[in-house]
Amino acid sequence: MSTTYISTGLRKLVTEQAQHRCGYCLRTEELLGMPLTLDHLMPESAGGVTAEENLWLACPRCNQFKGSQTHAHDPKTGEWVALFNPRLQKWTVHFEWSADGIYIQGKTACGRTTILALQMNNPEIVVTRRQWVSVGWWPPSD
Ligand SMILES: [Zn+2]
Image (cartoon, rainbow, N blue to C red; front, side):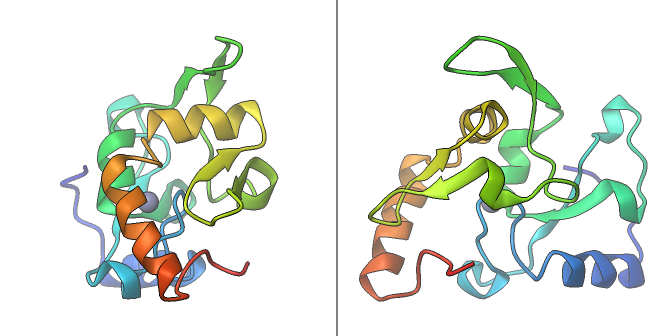
């Protein structure tokens, strides 16, 4: 996670663009109970800049698991694939919810690879999503 200073105005702008939710797992600040983090889409360690076009919201878990990754191996084909870019790509093109609303499923190589690389169905979030589903808070309707 970055330690670079990000101005309040830039943070607010990106937070509003991302609709206050993680660009990967769609967790909202409301459900997380704390502010989301800003993800450098192209990691700073790979030359990514701290600017609007390179920032998006991510929950601490997705951001932590993403780390400095930009690509990973597709678990189905073994191909080296670029991870999902929530600023430039549409979530529903690459991901969908399982019928029970608990698991994120990949619809494309990018989706499958990102789910694995960011551990988007890690055991802790699966338990939490099951609780959210049971009270009607999950999955998101859009
Ligand atoms: Zn997330």
